[in-house]
Length: 206
Length: 195
Image 1 (cartoon, rainbow over the protein chains, first blue to last red):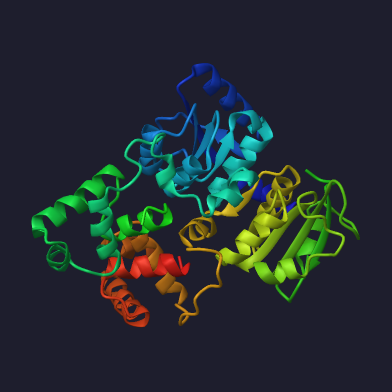
Image 2 (cartoon, chains in turn brown, red):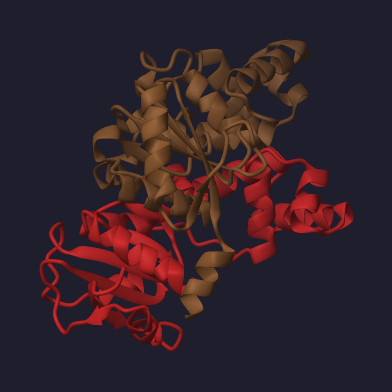
């Protein structure tokens, strides 16, 4: 009894975004069948606690969407490398499914898991994520790595040095140091130095 | 939803009522692991849970759900390597989340708390965690939000406290970690697997 009450009071709003309208319609109708989910329009960002995004591959546009979208994002991808999965998780994606694995039930479970702070990742990728370096995916995600100069500056930021100290150590002007940091934060859509350092370490860029 | 067969091994007082809660949700408790049985291990830490794993469990074949209070990166990795379908979730979760976890494990979904997954990524190597003076829950939360790029005012809003409190917490944790500034604190914490 207790459970059925919880179910009624906790419907999870889910939206579906896909470039292919047939895919979108299929996923939405599958999710609509689930008693704990309510399908909402994709442009109603407030109502969508979880957004299912269906794409062919993880590219920059998908990562930007994951970073900026209100609520949790679950990605359904045609195929997935460990490096792409790493980028997706670091961009805040709360669920990754290969399209061929994403039946109605599993998709619904992944959406519900995302709504409570869990992250679904194909088990074969879970093991590989650890130790995967984002750099190796450079060909897939243009600009996914750091240049030598960027790495040098960001390493010093991670060691707790301020702009002036970094400039002195590397024989750059303070303005150059600021520009390098700005380039990194802009390219990866990061908010500040602490964010940049955490991202770079987790992605294996440093 | 009901009728799924589970084998529960629980360690410690918090974990003890797990079997009863799952039975209450319509699951069938069985004595031994086997095909179509989800092995549920519950304890304070992931390592304690895995240490209690029954001898009959076949890694890579049997379905595994680990319930723990805390998820250290090494433990998460060990759990992932023990079961193709390892699923981890907090032991004190509402019964609906436990039931969802059992179903995810049964179908081999692979589910890990997002924060535990991110901590796993930042770790350098498989070596033992460096021993550091433990941080308080509040310090860890503030560090995590800093690592997500939040400034003091955004952190204060997220934690429903004053900016003054946030500044104090950051002051304490920079002293405790012996670091020079925010970026240094975050880098240090990611490398140690603290966040």
